[in-house]
Image 1 (tube, rainbow, N blue to C red):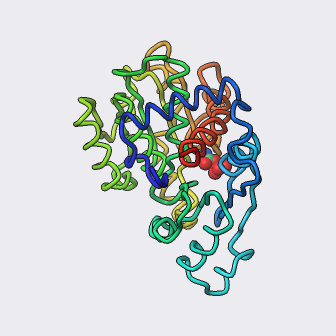
Image 2 (cartoon, helix red, strand yellow):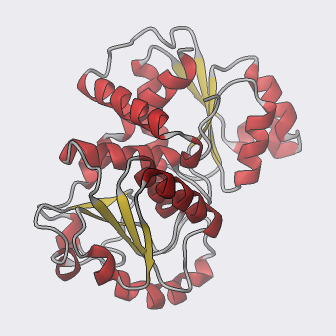
Length: 305
Ligand code: CP
């Protein structure tokens, strides 16, 4: 593995290796304090981030390295230098480049031109670091989650796509309940379905939240208006997505041991009620904390060869 651009590019064995490595970093965050000694990791973020940027910075520091934040206006990219020239030049200085940008095409251009690992820190299409975290959190709670089911309820976001791919790689079933108007990306779901078919697991699509949640071990949702969505869609999205809000009644259809997951940031009263996200079945802050050992595991995997 040279880069991490999408979850689907991992193999089941590669995904399992990253889960094991994440467990080791979760147990001992400073177990490899010299991996990145004297090395610099670039963080090129064109969109805001709390969890991804800071957990990656913490991960780099705990691996002995330093980060530099490269916002668009810090780089000559903002004045027309090409992505390819930028990627080639930065490859001479950096150990890795972590990129959050809306465009998957731009991310792919960076990765094609760079000679260092490029890590997707969230594009409109994919959020692989989040999906590794989600399955790691599930494994902490259910040590052998194979055969269990995650219910994803809400807008068909990049998080839903990467979650479906990660579930399939982990032999976990997933049911996605999304409204007709806001489905997950078809190519991303086809990739998840291909993996699921090879693993003997299921990717179920439905418009009915109750059908998805019945019998699930985890109920997951995401914001109704993502970073890449036009703000003028907010009212239409709210109308279409209100029946998909995760509340106590919906969560009550899941298994008694089921947990609530959310990638955050959350909007209480929109995609989830305060009673659920702040309630006893919510593990969202544990999930957020797990972003750091995941970032360490991915950096270690890409940079220790
Ligand atoms: N879940 C997630 O990616 O959070 P940030 O947008 O804060 O990085």
